[in-house]
Length: 328
Image (cartoon, rainbow, N blue to C red; front, side, top):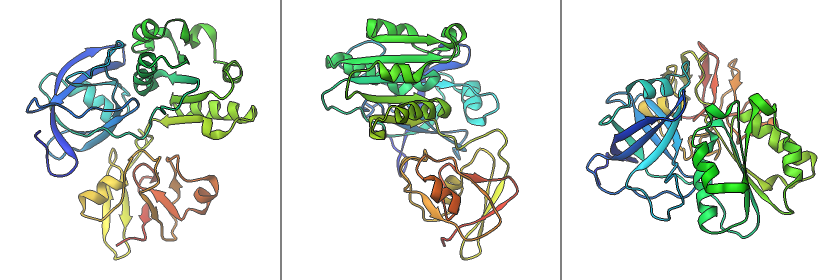
């Protein structure tokens, strides 16, 4: 398999199709056409694209086959929602065509579906369907008891909705908010069998609301297993400067994370998930005036208030500010 030094595989786009007005599906293969390593249900990959320097790094879940077949496909399937004010997804939608070259990582399994017995509830919000669909397929193939709730602003914006309904049958509920209004998440959880484990992916506010509903019912927080879209990039982000303990300064441009800028500058860093979930990249901050915009899901409220660490894979400071890190 052709692989660049490090963690990335040389790859190309094999096909593309539009799923909704804003969501497109892309098929990815190795550039030398050798087999790609399989991913588990819930796995995601890193994509580096945007020219030889790979100026964009984004994470996308592996969707896998769209019907209940046990064998893997000879390519990777992802679905990307275009956010016109976000540089990465807009660039990808505008430029990715059959033959486009890029680099991809091997599958990363940070959102695993447990093989333990017992009932499961799958909850997908909008583009959050991408890691949930392979979980649905896995549960279907293993004849595990499950229910699924798929919500969006309107049915026309829900990618793979027909495939979800065909595979899940009566176990699937599709919630069209334009018709039915906001979902009753407390009622949804109350209707589940005892001991159910919930896997949820979608916008942060929806996940927060589901976790709050579970807490209100006295559920163990461990029963809500979630994946949040990477919040590293926002349209309002401006350039910032990172100053290291030895006085060196590293420029961080819009659309680039602090972690990516540090790596490009040859600074030794630790990282794993690159989505603000694992905490491996949490880096000590030296006292200063910069206020941290915490975008991770690892640090707790007290740690955020202290402002002594920042997850450099996704968190940031205001444009024009200088962040002092306690690393050399």
